[in-house]
Length: 472
Image (cartoon, rainbow, N blue to C red; front, side, top):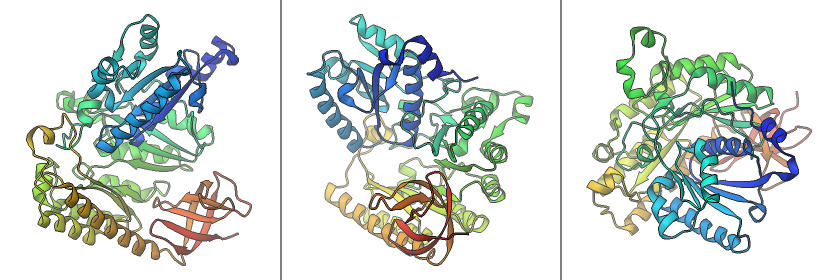
């Protein structure tokens, strides 16, 4: 059973007496999902959400440490929040998430710019930490857990469109890529009980949500054998192994249980995605035809330095399988340029890989050294900044070219679009996504948010399809 957050908080005290909290989430979808868990915990002790920072009693920043730019953004936001705090002495400020463990002493003790520091596995302790603040004590908990999945907490969709929702299925990561801080900030990989996943999705569907994204640092590595770390599966009993549920089985279970709900998932890892996942996607029409498949580099030398557990050859073989089993599937990428010791030949190998795959879209970054990672400890960040910028620009330009070419293939075709919001450029147009995760913009007509529309594509940009509604 889930903790019933809203009703408990309403019966504990009158709505007008509730304290106000605000949460600002940075970084990945996992942080968005975590913020919804934190919101539930706060509502359970008498807080209510506010999007007005000036009218809040508690402001929390759920942070990301994956790139230097993300940390700089958080620091800048903390500066503006502390200007609010000068006019509101009772305001409490907290840092959650991946920056918490790394910068706890700096934020809380040295710079004294926050009152509360909480790591991703310690959100249940927030009520106790708020009491510590009232008692004049330091409020910090960044301990990692081997069991925590927050499976019994029903996330509060405090900032939702009522159509799309994230459902976390795993926490942590075991891959230990040398550039990544996640294993150190989120701990070892463990999976969530599938029954609690289905319960959460069922409640979302009953409340009108139309699309669910199964979420994890590495969803293809999902493995439920009764609880515990994935690395300990080898010690599981024969019965546990026979009844275990991997990601393809979970995906099928969700698709069968909710046939009228769109199902997505992210993020996949090339070394862990198997054929069964692809065949399950092909079997169920409500599983969207999109796979986000980070590669990071097109050079085997760089992949080895990154401790990626796949070669370019193995990655391309997986791409071939996807295109054979799921011919209408879109594929997106993550790419890092300027990794230590990356040569011009390594960079050209990345461009060659992109030309080979022709991704539909991607997320591209220049390498920034993250303290605490193996790359920071063992490798010299020796690619000059101007070269990183030039290589990143070339990667982005090539991706835009491929995106434009891929989107041109939709012109004249009909696509099914789930309407999510108004277009950014026109309040007379809706925007939504097709199963391939491509944004589609079209005239509103008589359609409403949350409805499906059949749209004929008449034009496109590098990122968006433009269509006209087909009225049955």
